[in-house]
Image (cartoon, one colour):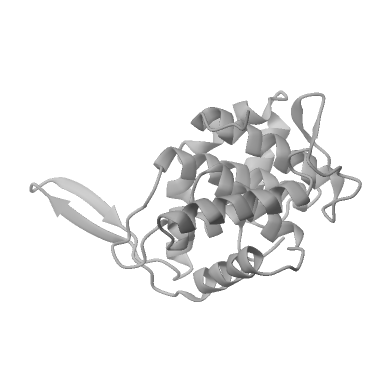
Length: 226
């Protein structure tokens, strides 16, 4: 697996580097992150989509702690739909990812006390290397003609599904244009049925998982395409 998980990339995009606070839809981010973990497991050949359910293909650990915790949950549970897994995984996942990023020195945990007893945590950037690479990769996908690799195409699809375009430092008409381009990438990758999975550069097994998770996010947020 990649040294940086899709869930981590989404979180770093969503959190303001200076204030250390999340921007945009919190529910959208949490759903996107939950989907990101499942997509990473599909990319690693551990999960697939069959018979309307997320199923285990291989139960060997990946070596990535958060992904392996989720894999163990899927292995130990009865099969569930993509929508069900998103709801099961999104609660508590953000705190787990934040703690992991802080332990690796990417974010800093700032614990502030308000009203004398309420602890409020902020997570300003400590090392921008990872986020800079993520933004550069997405920037190339948004502006270039090259076909993005599997992970970048999946990231683009999740950003669009979770409506995270404002986190790309865009506003106004730029947001709408970016959303169209992200959806175009998703379409071309075979995630939406516009292009057959056989014609896509993405492995069909991965494309199918991304497709159903994107649909589940959009349905949960009430933004599914007609």
